[in-house]
Image (tube, helix red, strand yellow):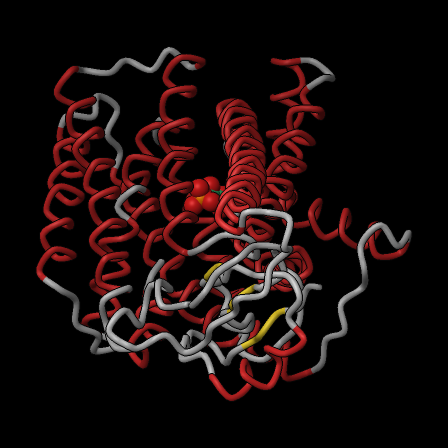
Length: 410
Ligand code: 3PG
């Protein structure tokens, strides 16, 4: 038998009355697994769908001091409960790891390909406002086709959903175009080194705007992030202020995107993939007039002729690749958010930056001084420390604080 007990967001206080009511019908034994979803519209839940044995949920992480709230002693008589429990637990953990591994590998690979093609295009066609718009247009088209052909389920959205999405889309648009402007001016690796400092922006915004306080370990972890990024910036051979500021603005915008996104999505039942699709379409509407004002069709046409004369007709495939891979990597990352915890996502994002930094340095043969590489390594180490210290705090605070911590976390 399998069932799940859903609780309101991040409240882990399992109601013993519900469990006791249901316990007579529990035939096989079970093991609760805790899953803290990043998206606040999802509910934290205790899944008991696995055919395992457990005599109490005392070991469940948040209430060690409490007495066991449930005893379930029923299990298949011909099997040792502990061995079948361990076996099923092992299988489930392995399956989860494989799933997360596949998500991460896909996300990183798509992101690396996007970054390579994006830079190849920008090197010969330096119109970041247009290329940013094309990425969003391509994603919007792909999703409209997916909905029309029923490859993806069409989301049911209303005006309230769009109102909540609007500030998220504004922040997404600013973050996207600022990162692309940055990459048009500096090496891909440098943009991503600066972008690895996003947690520092998250803490600063949460501290001063949301009045959230953090434990000393979180603040301390910002030192290597800020110091490492500073060292990398000071020793960057091809430093450019517009490139640097673009990455910094992108960091700030994405912190606001995450905060608005978590606040605005409460109670909506749109999947990660469709949420990103709607975000992409709204961002396209917002960005298009600005792209025309900043660059414009005349400059785009002249630049296009030059790029094609330099690269050949295949240049159009480079543009197509950067647009398609931009959409795909974002789609996979939003789909991952449906599946993994904020901590796992945050670590995955840091690993993604390492993949992009290393691969772009190799492919574009970016000159790197040892001191510059040291700065990048310190910054990335700081991001790991930040994730760890944030996570420890998250799981040792009263329940009422967990939601606000998750909301503040980039
Ligand atoms: C963009 O163009 O939106 C940025 O490259 C996004 O960067 P990120 O998803 O790696 O933060």
